[in-house]
Length: 176
Image (cartoon, rainbow, N blue to C red):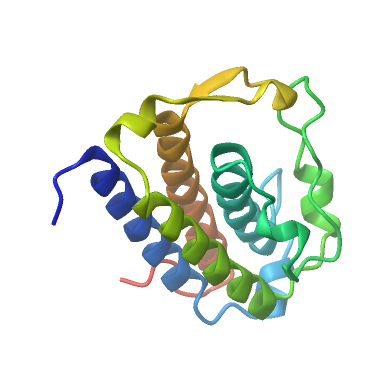
C-alpha cells in the first residue's frame, strides 16, 4: 500500500462513502421525502447533494470532463440549483420539492464512485497542488487536494445529517 497523500485521501473518501452507503441502507421513499421541522433538508435531497457534489467536482471541475449527471439517470425529478457566480445556491426550496428515486440514486452513486476511484488512481501527490478555477461558482481557484478534502468533509457532514434524520423517524441512523 502506498503512503502517498493521494492514497490517504482516497482511503478517507472510500471510508466516508462506506458509512454513507451503510446509512442509506433500507431508506424507503417515505423516509427519503420526509420533511423535517425547521430548516433541515429531507434526507433524499441531502443524499443527492452528496453524490452530485462528488460527481461535479471530480468529473467536472478536477478532471475537466462532463459530470455523469449530464448523461445518466440520477434518480431525481429535477436538477439541483446551479451556482450563479455569487456563491452556492440556497438548496432549501429545491430539497423540499425534489423527488428522489433512492434505488436509481444509489446506482448513480456507484457509477460516480467508480469514475472517481479510476481518476484518483491516476493522480500523483504533485497533482494535488494543481489549481482549479471555480470562479463560476463564486469560489475562486482551489487546489485539487483542497477539493478532495472538501468532498470528503461534505460526505461526512451530510452523512451525519442523514443519520439524524433517520433517527428522528425512529430508524437506526449509522450502520454501526
